[in-house]
Image 1 (cartoon, rainbow, N blue to C red):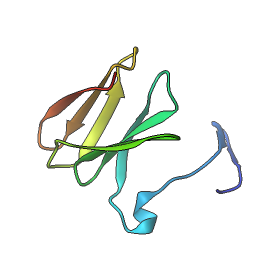
Image 2: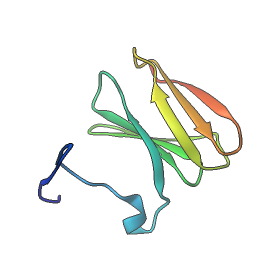
Image 3: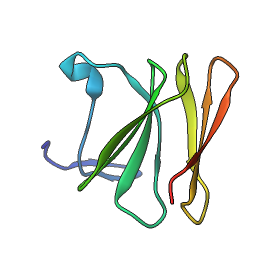
Length: 92
């Protein structure tokens, strides 16, 4: 872990960069509204769901995932990619 970095907008508590370990670059992300889970859209088209107790990789897109958003109830995750496709994932 990195030490806390104060900024004018708040404090950075942690950093995670997949490209530092030779993996694809993360270009979009969204926190689940109720759980400690982060959805990450990657340059290689994968959507990763990472959290304390789980990690999933969802394969659908063949191009960079540029947008991710959970619905307010957390039951759906919407992904959008450079290939023009929108994915709707049931995360309930």
